[in-house]
Each structure stands twice: as C-alpha cells, then as structure tokens.
Length: 115
Image 1 (tube, rainbow, N blue to C red):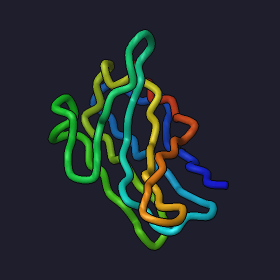
Image 2 (image 1 turned 180 degrees about the horizontal axis):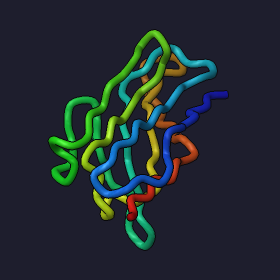
Image 3 (image 1 turned 45 degrees about the vertical axis):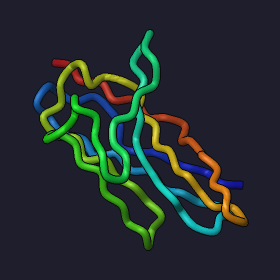
Image 4 (image 1 turned 135 degrees about the horizontal axis):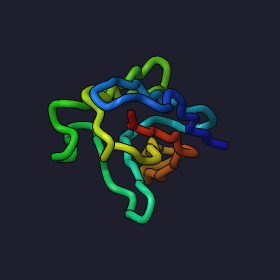
C-alpha cells in the first residue's frame, strides 16, 4: 500500500512563506515523477509545479525540490498571495512493477493566505 503524506500547510499572512512536504511510503520500485497541484473552492485542480516546470502564477515565488534518499518532495512557497489559498496536493508517478507508472495522490493540505 502506497501512501503520500503531506504536511506544512496552515494560515499565513500575505507576503509570508510556507514549506510543504510530501513523503512517500509503501511498496514501489522507483519514482518517475513528483509534483504539486492545488484546488481552490469552486475551481478545478491545477498544476503548481512539476519536475521541471512551474505554473506561470507561481514562477519566481515557489520552488519544488526533492530528497531522493527520503522519498520526499518539498514545495517552498514565498511571497504568498491571498489567491494562493487552496488545498495543495502532491502527486507521484510510481513504478510498482514492470514498465508502467501509476499516479498516487496525497490527502491534501490546506494553505490559507489572509491578513
């Protein structure tokens, strides 16, 4: 059973910073890709950051990084804006066996940017 456990969300003032973490556990062969998505109320889930790409609305403010030894991906969020308020989800494309990858999702962590 594969699990993605996120942490680091919370309430922050505009201009502040947060660091999200997502740790993968369970049985898998290797990680193909990891990324972060978000979903605001009434909106569709959207990509925030992938392995090498960022959504335009976070470029220069957010940074994705990965610790392969810990099977963990991070999202450093700086200069946060009220419009960044959303539930943030991490995703991982994993090899369980063979050559096909399967996408798994974390449970989501709430980020609220408000004064």
